[in-house]
Amino acid sequence: MGILFWYSEWQYSLPTPVPAQYHAVASGEYIGVSKKFISEKNKPLFLHFFNPDCPCSRFNMPHFKGLAKKYGNEISFAVVVITSNKGYTEDNIRKKYALTMPILFDTSLAVICGVYSTPQAVLLTANEQLYYRGNYNRSRYCTDKKSNYAQIAIDALLACKQEPAFNNYALTAYGCSLPNCKK
Image (tube, rainbow, N blue to C red; front, top):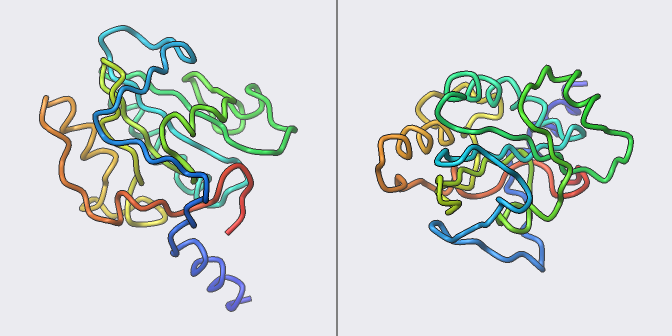
């Protein structure tokens, strides 16, 4: 049993392999999601890329919900569900995770935002420019306040600061490959 737990922890501590067809999206690039998602005008948008079959995504959900609760008046939040499992619906995701924000099943958003792993955070300015794309935290359970990357990005954006310089742990994807949960 200990070996299985260790293997599970170990495999998700490695970076997610970058897909061969991956196209990087630079910070500051116009994303143009208004065609896909209508957020409140003049408000930044936070997209949570989530796969309900991914253990890392499930461990991350309380942290994401905490960010949405704390910053929901200043930022629009949405969950982008990326999975090949057709059994999931907006209603069962909303009920299972007690979500109140929009839930989207749109895999093209991952490509547009340069996301190839879950969980990933994408923060867009009110002008739909990529401000931050990366991990929530260095800790799998999002418990390390010093590496709370998504919150650091939110705080900097709301303070009208340039995106902070993040280390590789913030910007290298860790978790499950899209659209399936494979490592």
